[in-house]
Image 1 (cartoon, rainbow, N blue to C red):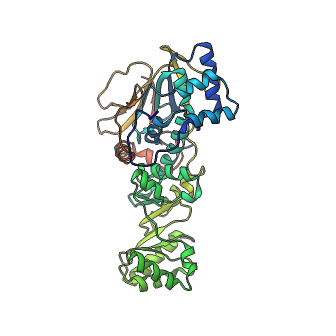
Image 2: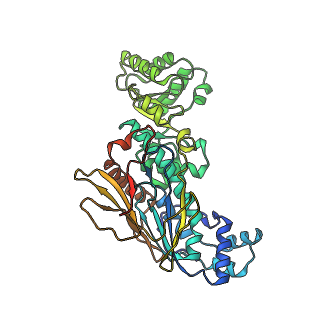
Image 3: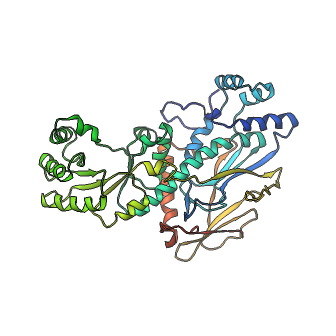
Length: 439
């Protein structure tokens, strides 16, 4: 049976994400079906108890990808067969899964918005069985993409309007690379090296050559001549395979003073960039850009601010845990049949009841607080409601193509970031930029 929600994007349909699910979700569904509690009306919320150590804010990313996946979250014959092979033979459960289609409601923060401890970034209202079944998918998407986006946003801020290039594909899983490119673009990265991200989401792609291309040729000059002949003088040439000075001189001799750019990928980058700028200018290549790569993170980018660098290429530190620490979002049941429920576990307490959330702003438009409460919030001047409807009775409220959804998230993120107080931009460790308060 074809899913009833979602758009025909013209792309190859993804495999069903139904088995990207922890087995204990099915165990709970099976038990709830058996004791009659599976259809209880429930509310689940996704939130982070805290930000990664020292971070001032987080960026919500992945909502668009989650909505893309939702229509395909179905258990067809192949998925049911796979469950049987893994020893899941409860026929009542398998029959229920075979007929499963999400018919509940989903609200949440708009993708690209900022979040703070306790922010209810996603709210799922459905029967217990339907709601709990989405837990693993929702958390895997939102945790990954929000970690990447939050790290990338710090890098964009450190770059102070200089373009950033996402180039982490070779440092992570192939599908994670596509998601990372999308998340980085959401917060302001200009281009990605990943072609699939360009195809799915319309992220601009870029790329020239690696050291292997230079080493392939009998000389650096021959490599540069081949690249310029193919891509034109506006290309960017990698000049540090051998001697940087000689590489720059050869690059300008081959491409002329209209050479588009040079790339530095090793060494003392601030010193090399300053020297390269002087040399390029002396050779008449005053408009040639300097692109730096080599394990950059927000601190390295900040350290290059005084250097004459035009673009930053970021890879490993963006797509790995060292640069993008987990954001620790959780998916918790907060209401059952209209009654608030909450965990009391030490260190992992939750607050019962479906939450309302607004962001308070002062008269200048600067954000001052995040108000989160299960009670109605009396509106004040400058309040912005944060929770918006995403899915109603199983139907996506505003269907968009993947590229349209990313563009909307990027625009929303830019508006939200502009309202942050000045202390939010600090790279030093500190408390969250906004306090989460209960009205």
